[in-house]
Amino acid sequence: MSKRGIALLGAVLTLAPVACDSKDDSLNKNPALTQRARDSIFANSTIPGAKAVKKSMSVADSVAARQGRMSDTGQQNP
Image (cartoon, rainbow, N blue to C red; front, side, top):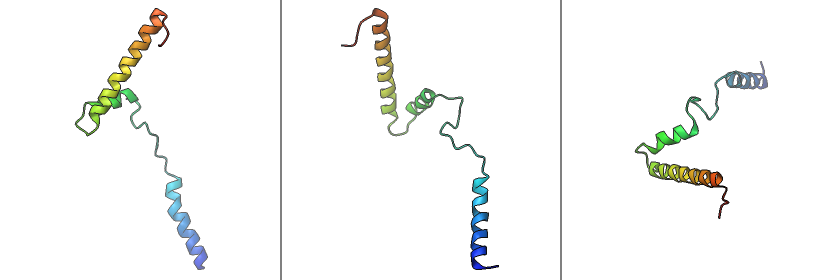
């Protein structure tokens, strides 16, 4: 067998397991948890930056509540 044939066979044998891999590489590893639930778990941890996540979630809740109140009363955003 020539050097070119050996190199080609080596490349095929190296790439074959990768091509046949059926592992799901999606970002959502746990479909039972929503993004909000994952953020909530992270916010209540002791990891650096968790307080910022918790604060941003509370601000988002506040904005959503305000928008709900404004749409209920028929007002427009100032």
